[in-house]
Image 1 (cartoon, rainbow, N blue to C red):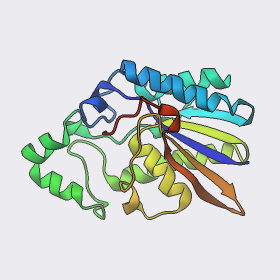
Image 2: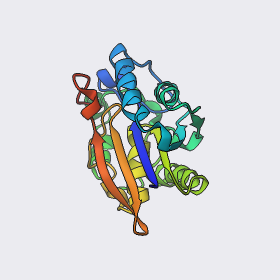
Image 3: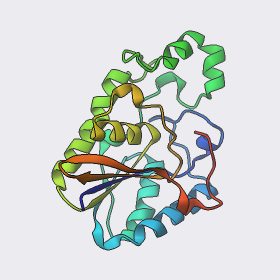
Length: 212
């Protein structure tokens, strides 16, 4: 079965503090995050015979997660630069409350999901981010026309992977929750990709934390 398994990286200190974490602010995985990696590795390790590749964002928090999962699968993760999180520019490491208080105009613009021209100050625009990340998935799927492929990335790039592979509108990008080390499965059936599970956290019993 051709399957794409998308994994958001393990919890970092920034996630615990609900801070935006893009490309510049690459915080450390927390002790809880390490246990999440171990749980995800055990879950995916049971599918070892069917997984043909592990891809990862090169950012530290994703790479650490991918290395733990890869060890359980007997595969070395392959870094794909375009799986990096969106560049939040000057606001990287800010909380949403800080943004709303200190940059209210940007905050209001950010709330409009249809605003594809939104650009993070000193960072990346929505219009540029989506094709950048979706291109990474296209290349990965072209390299592996069958088997299960694990992709470890970020909330943003996992979200783009879902909408771009399924052909959903770009404004649906931020309408679902993606937990640290949650698993989303896309399966190719009857000539099209379908969503099998979204943000499966069953393996994170006692390790699940809501928030960014």
